[in-house]
Image (cartoon, rainbow, N blue to C red; front, side, top):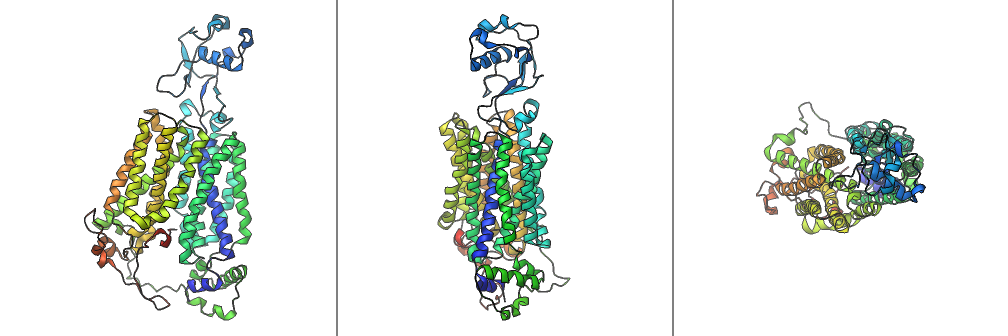
Length: 579
């Protein structure tokens, strides 16, 4: 008896699976919110040096209101900024007003320049709180010499994700999907709750990194858990719909950020959602497929009975008689040589495809998170920009659900990368404002399409024997792209448009590199390393399927006695989404 037969008896997507899937969707929703909320927690704002000499000045003596008084003090105490700055006054220097009386300059404060002697901000800073009331920037004075630290904090979040992605899969294979998922979301929920209690930058950066290690990394285990208890026909559905929950969390973060301008309160409100997710824990169970594969048949029977009961299916004791026949693997001999990731670099054409995919994965995540995190720098309303940046992902995912059937993988991948890169470069020619925002959103739309396509295209490029390890390697390099994205913005200190130049050039380069890969839509996929080396060997721009006829692989007859060939799905709705 194969597990798909068991699913037919207990329900392929019944009430139990729907309940589990709702928990997975809520977790994905929270991940989108937690990832993007950093831009509101670490909101940057105009700032200038505190000037103790002016604290005693009472502007009412010169009939100035509060705003005029602030402007008067800045004009006299702070040097003007250069033309390359987005602020009117310098952020990190002030005039030395020691020994100068206010009466010497206040009557003519609009044109006053009583000294040219400047010094660094030695008494702290004053912050413009018109957009953010508080952020980690104001609480921990992350400005001037420390102005790169907010971006570093977001990079550390992605470092946590990268670190956990190297072992979370192995842990779930060894200890069980449910146990690891339970540990990650409960621990992650607790860590997210204490984010707002951070009393130093060091504590904040540690908490963000641990959030990436725990809660965010539960994505892999959660998707595996739901994939193992639904029929193959439902796997693509559950994978695709998760993308829209990510978008929902992304947009809600912008909405919450608009109404809650204090970072500690915002972090506490956001933490409510992960806590709600923990309420699903008593309703869930271990993956019966995993239990059977590990030989825990008694526990597997209990879980199967529970799923059947929730799904209102009746099972007899006789039903379990053949359960032990499932997942029995063919014994391996010592002479069996197991393919490894090194085989992907041992053969020239496989090596070319592997390196190309690694390059594309790095670029895709780099540009995606780069455009996501910079949405507020486009010259329009900060919060609207981030909301729209999340909203444009919805039509992008809808497009992918159908476009792979119309135009294939390679053309869509190449086109979306080139379009995204071109949009990034065009923004350099447009002044900050609505039109710059529109062009940037076109780039975000395009790179979101790339993000969705690259998962499927990658799984179809690698041979079956190393498909998971190949996908894992690409995903790991993609994580490096997300780590690098916040750090790229530090380059703007040398030339403000430089990050978008990097995003644009690399994205176009990735699009052109994708032409090196063979089209996989509707084609028989390779099973062995040797077949992987031969798969797609032809002129770069030719997609004649006749060239791939020899790559068809006869697979052994399954338990039901049918025969067939492994073939790439005609559309995304037939594809098996990677775990």
